[in-house]
Length: 385
Ligand SMILES: [Fe+2]
Image 1 (cartoon, rainbow, N blue to C red):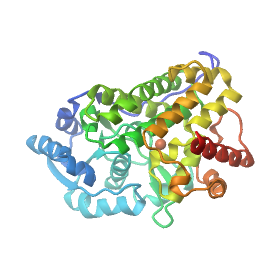
Image 2: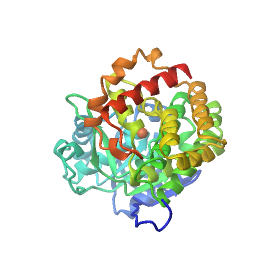
Image 3: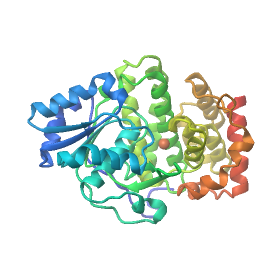
């Protein structure tokens, strides 16, 4: 779309303090919301890294009262978040939530903000029940420790139904983000890879979305460029602060982009695949990257040429191959290694479409039969590439 073809709208969720050392601002930011009782949530990995102790000290040294929940589970459900509220925040009278972690912690923190403000239970307000208006939410300050989900700047929290683990979402946004790349240096290589490919999938799917606009494309292009240029360095040497900083910025830009455009094939397939076969989100969501580049080359060659430019190569085909090589090099398992056949993956196609609002966001419409063919192509491309 050329600038001025039609009007477009873009949303920027909240202020972001970005850069190494930004975590030192945490107590000031909490105080700006007039809160003195804080619920701080994180998971076992963050606890082991020592980062949680640092944040607790920063908050308590400023005279804030901190109630801690240190065992946030991956892929939160409505029940898992309501349990955090019942066991920690409710009794402590928490007024504000601080989420320190990866996507699951950030999403749990946003939903905890809803519960503190009396907007629970969560289940009736999920998007599968209809596009309800945003609910009242307590202030939520997020400190990402991985570079990938973009959850800190998205207007939804991803949540699974506790009964059947179907992935859903609920409107919930952060109030303030402290994006300190130093908090990401302790992420182990496989987490760095999964998160980085998630950010690459977000930016590629946003850039090649039917809803892309000049603002989202600006963010998505730069996010793709930064991930391709920095992911391997951060994976090889987690202490490479320059690569970590570039990835943290990329992840945030990708989040800004997809929050405005939505996603499409990769996350429609990836969400269902991850839920069905118990794969990490970043691995499941990344598989479609090479196929999406080829799909775009076929249906919108000009946009595919821009993707190639972001990947630092001359053609879309070279970009697809570059993505494949990087995914194999950084440990994204083949489907065969995960025990997933083409037939088994195609069998989830209808559910994937039914469970995901992003499916219709492709540059040209994709029928269910075409989606099944794309799934076969994703698998053969990756396992043979
Ligand atoms: Fe994702």
